[in-house]
Length: 85
Image (cartoon, rainbow, N blue to C red; front, side):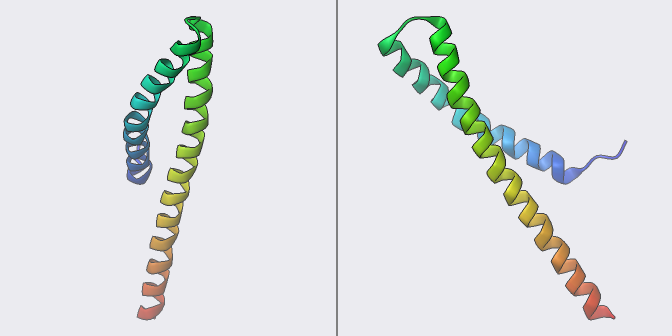
């Protein structure tokens, strides 16, 4: 089995950023919703919606960042190979 180091790096970065953002956001969500209700379903649903939206946005920007980085690397390699010929 061959490992894709770039994909692994992207997954680690995404997971670490998710943990750093989701922990305080999760606490803030629970704290805020508890002001209005103690219904566990409403609290869970609120958290699910907020964290899901944030995860989609975060994941999109991380994917675009790594995609651009990969394309830049390929362009650099192509330019280098054209120089040698």
